[in-house]
Image 1 (cartoon, rainbow, N blue to C red):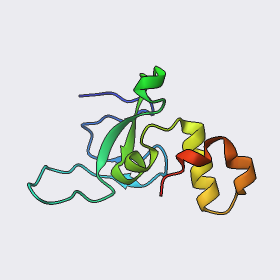
Image 2: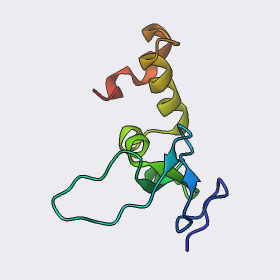
Image 3: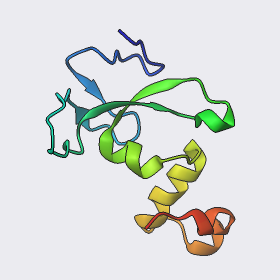
Length: 99
């Protein structure tokens, strides 16, 4: 069993996404079926290529959206998409903005 930084355990029955707070669930691998976005995954808060070692519980949706972004970049993207931050304040990573 993997113990995660945010206090969760990857093998526990009930846990929450570190990024959005959504309740996440275990998904058994079913061939040719895409897992739902609330499937439980483990994610490096700081990407491995940036030296990250801390794991947290994450929903599949947030894990896919975050990709290889740092936590600050990911939070800025979320704030930009929700209209809380204007584009000029976000220009340092605008070229990395996922579709």
